[in-house]
Every structure is written in C-alpha cells, then in structure tokens.
Figure 1: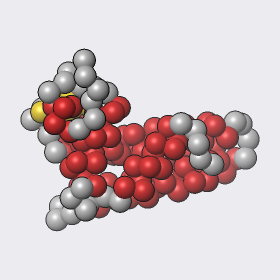
Figure 2: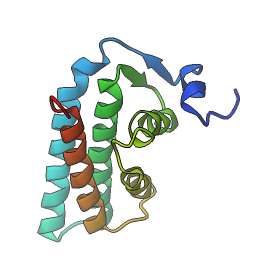
Figure 3: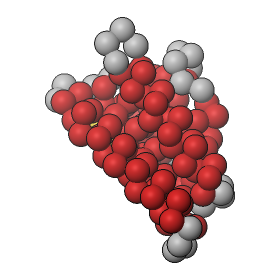
Length: 137
C-alpha cells in the first residue's frame, strides 16, 4: 500500500471511512477524555508514581478529544495517522483548531513532553473540542 499522507488517501484506504452513525459516539468520547484528564491530574497532583503515567493519561484524553472531533464530522478511523490527517483537514486547515494542539498530542504520544505540559495540552484540547462541538460552535 502507498504511503498515506493526505486526507483523500486516507479515505481511499481501509483506515478511514464515512460512517453516518459516528457522531452518536461523540458524547462518550468527550466523557472518556474528561475522565482520562481527571486521572492525569490526580496522578500529577499526588506526586507519586511514574511521570510517564501522567503523560500517558493526558495522551489518552487528547486521543479521545480528537476522535470526538473526527466522529462529529461523520468519519470513523482505524489508524492514528488517518485520525491525525482527518483532524488536520477538517479542523486545522479550516481555522477551527490550532495546529499546536496536534503537535502537543504528537509529543505526548512520543513521551516527549513533561507531565505538566501534557496535562495542560489535554485540558486545552478538550476545552476546544467541547467549544467546537457545542451548538453554535
């Protein structure tokens, strides 16, 4: 299979497809994002355990927030790369989402960020996703 590097190529691949039922999962994805962020904050505030746990929980929160955004547009992903490309095409290129949030997500996924930065980014992404997905957002 060719390298998938565009939204259009994702749609031609098995990793992203239209799904009219995808928006129905948005509330659950946002709830999971909120839950994971809450766990990340608790681990960070406790000051115990591995800092990587905080980053990972923040990453999971960001992942759910991005999935919620893509699902809201009627797409379902089966791969991280296509999820990112869909979010970039649907929200970043349209000016609705700051690309820095996607970069912070990628940094958390690679564990290339501090726990505090990851938690802050997850909170910002979740807040922005809720804002975008709210009526009139």
